[in-house]
Length: 229
Image 1 (cartoon, rainbow, N blue to C red):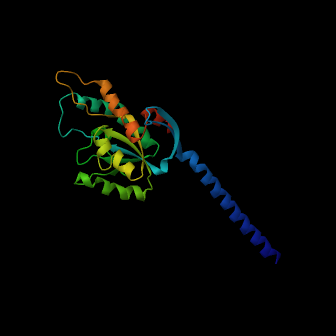
Image 2: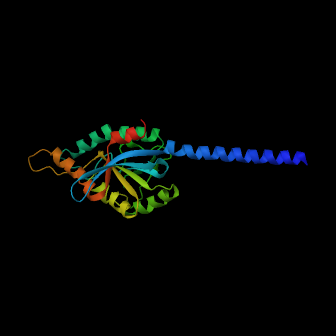
Image 3: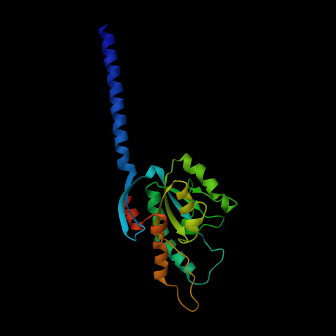
């Protein structure tokens, strides 16, 4: 009888220790996976607001939209140079530390060839159906399977494709996804006035327009610091 009592107590002790260890692992998870982003946006009254927003990396993904090697229309007005410089100075380091931290990477090139600097690695999802209009239909099952609810955006252009593509900021916000633009990891398309250079102030104004109209933004450096790089 005493032997069975000892066995029973030993079993209960093992179960208790197992539960305690599981609780400790669960308690540690937020420390590894939750990051805080200093997002900003503009209210209808024009006032800029900042907030410390917590997101879970297990439920977040970086969407690289239209990081093309070439542009289908090849505009000869300096935009291609601006885009290439942005890829080299912003997209390359963004990809490096996002991959190092294990952030889910999604490529959405919309039937164009991806720039060499952003070549997808094995395991990274490439949303590139034959018909670009089907890209949302191709992406949504992947997001549901991986329980992705927050989408970080980088790519081109910030005043056109990045907003209006089927997997861009506006359609995905309409479906209930939390969207955050990396405002210095994109370049808007601003046609050059006849005989005049492209106005950098106009470019920045178009990027800034995202905040009062379509939601939160952060910078590359703010994301880098949040990821602990």
